[in-house]
Amino acid sequence: MKRNIVLLLILGLVLIIGCQKEGSFELPDTPAEGSLLSDATGDCLPKTVNGTYQAGVPLVPANNTITVNVNVVQTGNYLITTDTVNGFYFSASGIFTTAGSNTVTLRGNGTPFANGVNNFVVSFDSTFCDIQVTVSSPGAGTLAGAPNACAPITVNGSYSPGVALTTTNTAVVQVNVTTAGALSITTDTVAGIWFTYSNILAVGNGQNVTLQAQGNIPAATTTGPKTYTVKLGTSQCTFVVNIAGPAAGTVDCSGVTFAGTFTAGQAMTAANNAQISVTVTTPGAYSITTDTVNGVWFNASGNFATATTTPVTLIANGTPVNSGPFTFTVKWGTSTCTFVCNFSPAPSTDYFPRTTNSNWSYEIDDDPDDSLYRTAIAPTHSAGGNIYNILMDNDGTGLDSSGYYRRNTATGEYFEWLDAGSFIGYDDPLWASYIFLKDNVAVGTSWLSQAFNGIVTIPPATPFSIRFKYSILQKDVPVSFTTSTGLMSFTNVIVVEEKYELFNGTSWDDMTPTIGSGKSYYARGVGLIKYEVLDPTGAVDAQQELRRYQVF
Picture 1 (cartoon, rainbow, N blue to C red):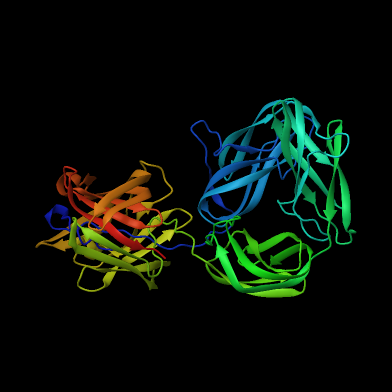
Picture 2: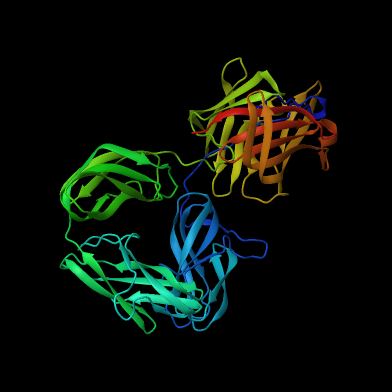
């Protein structure tokens, strides 16, 4: 794409600056590639350790976890593991569907042998980081109400034969801690379920702890009260859970309302939900769910105390794969209804998006009447065995081709396919591609384009050989500037220096002292936000700044 504001002369007669763009966005294949994020000492980020670790007590994979962050360069299948230390280890596997920063939870397995601090090495792809897990001495205490009924006791959630448990199924008991340390509290198994808790507690009386229900209540289980015995060392108390018969009724999706933001590639949370109406004909425990569509499903469970018509909030789960409208079927017993949920496209992680209809408006040299409009169109261009996207420019004289661009997602390299002969000023066309941006290399990285050889008739006909040199000056930094439309602020900006070299017959000469250089600013998910033409002293001679954009 031509830079409308830049016409640098090579040896007094050649056009130089080329406004760069990028290219194709292919979905990654297995396996995933990337790197574990760590701090300056090599410790994993964000250094999160969950659950309690006590010598001789087996880990609970759902509770004993560590969390790490991964910078995903290529999406696909992943396996992240640690070594085995002191009898236990952590691991996780799955599929990365989005590039960039991803948070992964590794589940613990095994039984610690002894107390102390254990240093684990986490590995992914060819990268490593460290995380420390402390195995504590056991604490001691008694259950309030022991040896009789737990007092006080609060049982939360609904319990019904054949209905899956959720995080709302808990029991809150009170403990008196006499020795600080790791406490493990559990119940016996009744009707297919049990309750557990583990954590490190300080000395103190009347501390409330929440036991999480585990397991599943078989569909053949008889309804009615079930007694559970809570155990903390030798201290025991009991509480009762009422297993109720299933509720019955009908679902109505006609007035569905949504809460939260539904975006492709972003995991759903409790804030993502759909509210429908239900008519209860038989009170009791209920579980309402949808089918899984686009990687997402909705569900809700609880108890209906009376026969009534009432709203029910279905919580979204999973991670949506694609954008667009998708139809979900709600099921409750034999009653069904449907609703449509629309998922927005995932935010672009590209430093030069070229999705169809994306468009940008630039201001030249702070003159609101001197502007440039750029847009990506649907047709593509095939050249050199690659597919390039086409960008168009309008400087007030109508749309004209701005160039052909693609991106290699696996390498983070951005290419332009251009007629270097016309660009530089040669007598004949010279089509070729070159890399103008790399988004996954460190600050200070430099690379060269191929040599562009041609003839310029002055007269006489004079052969020239020119190449471009690029360097990453800054990476993922904030950049702000002011245009006629106001303050423009961006994060995750890569600053690229652009220089030009001329072959003198035996070696390459840096042309910066003669013609100056260029500097490009690319913002992640936005594209080129600023371009500066620098004179031989490094002062800004001309500039092009983004004042409005829309990326699809």
